[in-house]
Every structure is written in structure tokens, then in C-alpha cells.
Amino acid sequence: MPNPKRRHSKARTSTRRAHDALTSQSLSECPNCHERKLPHRICPKCGYYKGREVLEVKEAK
Image 1: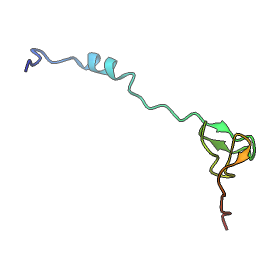
Image 2 (image 1 turned 135 degrees about the vertical axis):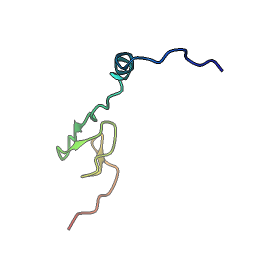
Image 3 (image 1 turned 60 degrees about the vertical axis):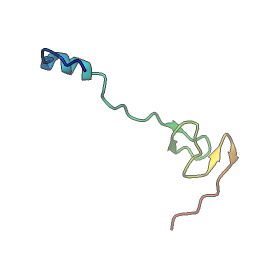
């Protein structure tokens, strides 16, 4: 297998890695309970999705 003849500089490596940073999750608001949730997912607080109850959620004591 071919191997590199010269090492890459720190600047070149850093430039390549500039796009590897993690981004925060995009959260949307639940129209039923107004809690923050992941888009296109059932709300973990109230169990609603697209205006109807999909999941029964047990109340926290």
C-alpha cells in the first residue's frame, strides 16, 4: 500500500478538522404541552404526536 512521503502540517490537519465539530440538537415545541422535543417524534412528556395521543405516559410522583 502507498504511504505518505511527508507528514501533513498542523495547519492542514486543523483545517480539515474544522468541520468535525458537533452541533446541538434542533428541538421543536410540542403543540400540546409546549415542552421541548425532537422533531418528528412522540413527545416524551405528554405522549402526543400530530395532535393525537399515541403513547400513554405514566405520571411522575
